[in-house]
Length: 426
Image (cartoon, rainbow, N blue to C red):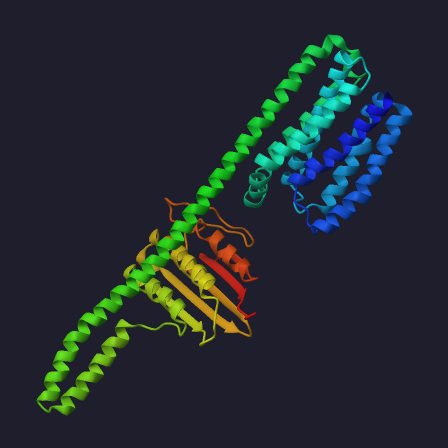
């Protein structure tokens, strides 16, 4: 009946790969990933199955970490998109779950199946697809979203899963298999019960991280909408004022013309033109970007800030949605940073330049003396201190949609935001 044992080993090794590949992120295309995995891991599976057939499951169980775990760890680390705690946690999670199923089916078959390997085969035939269904149905989508959203904090979880895997492998096989150490079996069963509970706790903690990330995303969207609505409201108020004033201008102008005072009417028209220009201030030729600029220019002026601008943009057709996101969030962050400074220190400069399909933007503003941001990092927000960070993720996402980059850092008491995006038309 060893055929059932050999088939169950082959089945287990195959489904360890499936379970892991459901959860991890490869840096290659799906087709290339499957080809590389089939070649490399196919050889590992073949050698381990051959080892079980030649030396028995007891011997191969003792060297399983060396013959299967470490080779697969090296291979998947090489093709993985994440080469950090995210990868190690995912790898150890899949391996530990698979090893748990293998150990449990071994024990059940030994005590209830008379070592005929039939119960072992049926158990693994059932449990592995069940676990994979649960992974696809409930875990895979939020787990991949979490990997994308949370780059840090995985090290502790990865260490816990690695220790659990080693603990389970050692207790199950050393100095001999657990079924030959019946006096230790009760403690081992308690470990088997504790392990799923621990993983459930870890997954719940990760799920809370995902909920926190979604909440932060929602706050960023609401803040962005607030900024855009404020700009639109400001423009609408300007337009209403112009319409209201135009009625008075028209009455006065008609009176002058009716009295045949042409020279006075011409002078009055020039005065109207000057006032209309002041009301409809144009800081940029692009009407969308100009709306944002006018709004924040007024906001900074009300704060007593010195707002210097160098805008070199013509009438090019630009992706205004993303650029308005970038500009509004960048200037909003600058306003927040200046609130905690003395009025004489409130300084902001904006440089925008379009050249050969690329737009370059730099916002530089004064910041707290104790603020330090290293280039290449995104600082976290500090709502009470009006620090940077709340809209920077939105800016980065908008820049990436335009095949661009965002960099921020502190320099000589200034916070600097650099963005370069592609504005070429497809």
